[in-house]
Length: 132
Image (cartoon, rainbow, N blue to C red):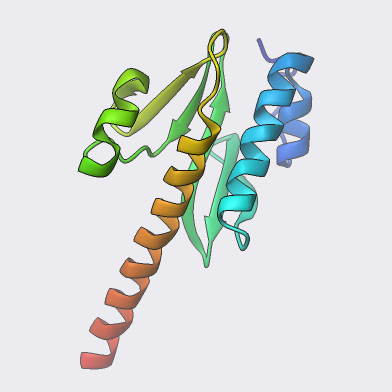
């Protein structure tokens, strides 16, 4: 589906490589993540858009012929088990089909969850450093 074979330098360039309807979905996912985690920073990692917070990766997104992938999805977390069941596609992957409504609210919940998870990890690492 992507029109360009070269690696995108930023998320704008990545999104621009897709048809207009997919661009709109990617932009909305991007805005959803940015609203959910206002301090999120954008980058390209593994040749796909990624969002970080405080130096740690939150989520990646990638567009394909028939779906948008979101990684990592908290598939093993009981709070997300039911809401992610229909989108589960592999270990840590949520697959949102392009011919179905995209669950932007769920994407926001995932981004917020990942941000909290990263904060907890950072606090635990800081405590460990202080004990040394």
